[in-house]
Length: 300
Image (cartoon, rainbow, N blue to C red):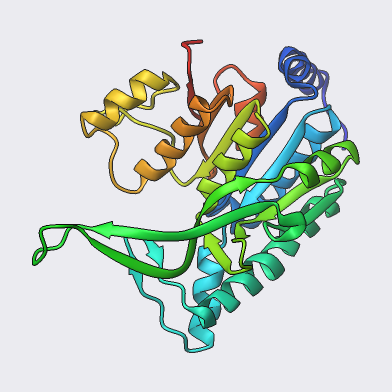
């Protein structure tokens, strides 16, 4: 493919603009939660994989945590297993958990590994069971009850929350030039298996490795104010006041809370970005404008 002088100049300009970011983030860990359209659209899948390979090549240390809700849903349907949801979380009995583990730890995980490898990276597929990386406990959901004065506590089965992260296998991967791709499945001391929300796992891993960035890919433009205008940068204080005022609500709330917790626990910045944009991850990491909302503990 021949490029004109003008095109070549544009490429050179873009690369030199990216240089200070590449220098700043060399050797730094960036945790990316991969999901939504970026995970199902063919062109976006390839742009995501190339972004991750390029980040690794210029010395950054990307870690990917992925979900797989739609893929789990379609296999459960094929197998005739009915799903129930409580507050957006799948009630997970042992038959459902087997499917969750097969789909997340097998099918989806190895698809992403393959995708990165085909684009020139070296990916290592893991679940939280590997090297006991993700320790979890059962998640109990509290719901206000009409009949009872106290909230009703609902057991949603093998759905868990993270209690601790053992980072040793992640450190090993970083030293070995491997890109970890992690399925959000954990275990407790008794060896019970739990399905965990991928945003929460990404946040917990980012905190455990004291990442430079936590990037959550979503199907929205980023965080918006009451008028629907995109907010490119926010401090942790801004976000807290937006939650209190009810500006942030619904499905965005757990994502924002997860970003906020990570920043409070020492992650330099958290980003909620639009995964429907090609090369969203690189645009957020290597340009001034970015493609979403950056949350950090200080205004910068």
